[in-house]
Image 1: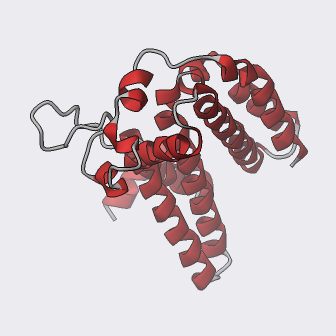
Image 2: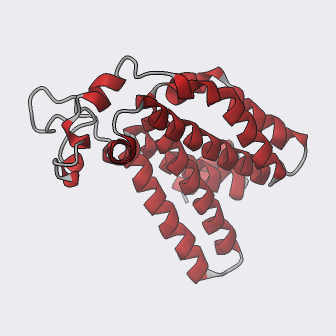
Length: 220
């Protein structure tokens, strides 16, 4: 728990300077000119339009379907209009939560030693996250990552309860994993990859199966 908080604090310190930044690049199209954020537009429109506010069936649509991310922008707009700091604050807060979840996952996989803290600190500070956290439209990646990790953690809980024979709790964790997986996909399409990662965990981590054993599964 302490490692989770430490790594989240590091993530906050590293990105708190983005609160003073303005909208940039794709932010204008996704937020400033997106009609789906306006209160007079039915909120359900986010489920029919692409990430940029264009009807999915329109020939000019980008076909990027991220309704939950757009809905989060709409909430931002309802609370603070077009004040950039509030959008950046939400991104930073999400990154801190994701960092805590990643550190928790690392503890489940690596134990309580220094490697868990190192993994969490590396995740919090790695420059690969810069665009996703500092750029407001990058919230699609951060939000998808949040539910990706929640889905994976729920699936790990499902595996643990299944091993103990607690069928009801096992199914509850499994349903939770499916719900979080769906949310991850609705934040950004790449969230679908959590299904493959969960399968890899089940086979190679939980069941400790080796690669050379895989053919035997299909030819029994």
